[in-house]
Image (tube, rainbow, N blue to C red; front, side, top):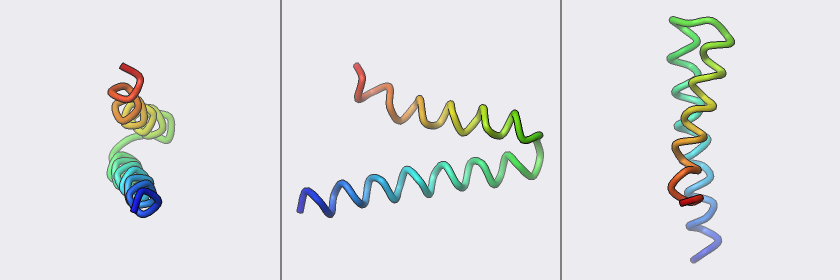
Length: 50
């Protein structure tokens, strides 16, 4: 069960990142899209760090 939970969380993280990058890429440059993707990663990591 723990393995399935971990896989589901990883798939969710990838899906959210992919969607944010795809939407940002339609309206922004590559650098801005990459920055927004990094901010999403930071927002997902920060609660675990604290």
